[in-house]
Length: 204
Image 1: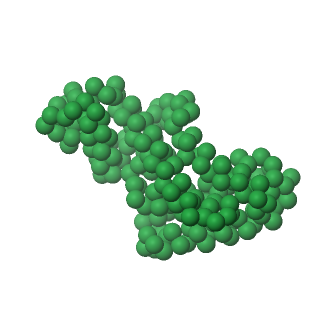
Image 2: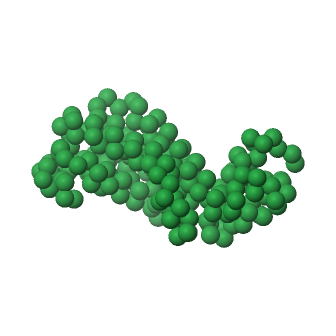
Image 3: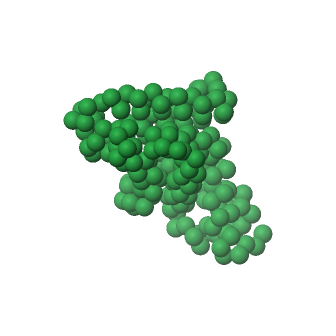
């Protein structure tokens, strides 16, 4: 099946994501990705030097999509606190809609994780969305002043935990109920953080 040069990369990414959903990020092969994409087994090498490169591309695509979903989710928020709550809901919504990406983004083999950590762009965009929300909530007085990073890590830990429980089938809720629970949990967390003394918040 012939592809234009620009479409081949997308076809390979889509095939990789589907295969990862079945066998995980460690067991899939470039040959099987090529077969599912309907191209020769050498075709993937036009865009990816190795399986690790393809995994890294899937992770980058996931973080780009996560950032976009969080921004879209928080847009209706009428206050910085509400936007932060909705940002968390966007995180979980992304996980429910694209669980295979979530697996690749956070369960990469060690060798790929090292390369991912060495590439600041991968994941930085999504975390920056959360960090900006935290900073805005600090400026509005909804969160204590100080270093926003520990507060962002705390909020991230909450929504990521819900996302992993939900996508792993360990949260007995529908998708709609999961998002409602996320909003409630975020409100509870922010309520507690909002009462945290600034000096304590900086050492979380």
